[in-house]
Length: 129
Image 1 (cartoon, rainbow, N blue to C red):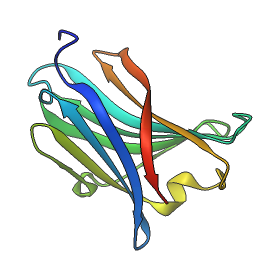
Image 2: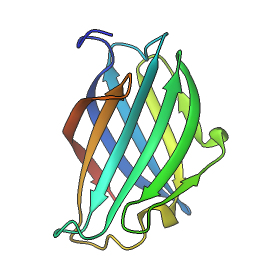
Image 3: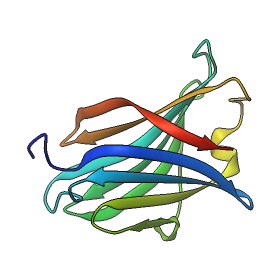
Image 4: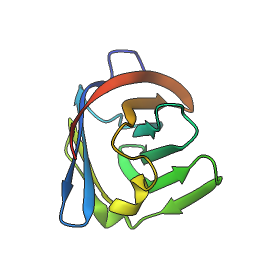
């Protein structure tokens, strides 16, 4: 995968009913081969509490949808029906509980990984929470 493939250009997060909707817009398309992950990292200002919300693809198809609570070391998997995607937009509807403990003063950024390696990090997130 070259650096021009699936470049994460914008990420946003909003609330809708009892869910947190994360949207990732990429410049290019979801890679048709190999592993690709998009996600959000949210943390308290001192980073003592951290959450990762992730959507993982293999060969262009979503295969995993989960959140990870860093301090508890707990991953929670969700049903893939919460993920929609086109060539350049990926959306995941996470339960509100995925962000529990972050509070109003949190920091958040988006990331992508390709073939198990960090591809991008620190991508700004437009928040509507």
